Image (cartoon, rainbow, N blue to C red; front, side, top):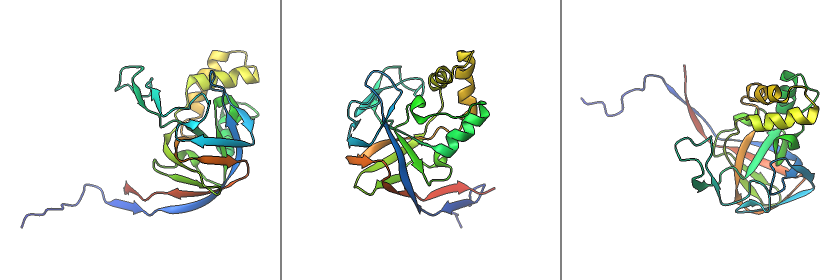
Length: 205
């Protein structure tokens, strides 16, 4: 008899959806002409992201992260918000031999507490803010030399370019995630966040 559903080479394990409770420990906004951010008490979010922010917009231009498009192609902006965690930045700082890395140096908009391994949140994870805002994780944020150069300049490294090159290696899978606004509104420092991690499937070895 024909087997319409042959077993895969490796068994598939379904990881059920789960919920976490977190907190917006700090919020940041960037001027329209530079990616570095500054602390604020609240962020007003629209469907275009943070109004006036460096990464705001319903669309953006493709760059080195999208080699499948000619550079500068207009595409949907799924990188409206940069989300990071203090514990992960502390690990990166230690790897770079630094006392600290401040979220604003690398253009973060949201510092979250209470989510272990924040950078490993899968695409589709939803962050429900108590005040009504919802943002949706698109992907892990790949560390780049531009952010590394910013760190090196802020801490006064003698060799800025060496620091710029070190950051992508030290921050691999620790740079946080990028997200976009699914439901607009205003978020505030200290606000509670309900994090819904979607169901996933993985190959079990």
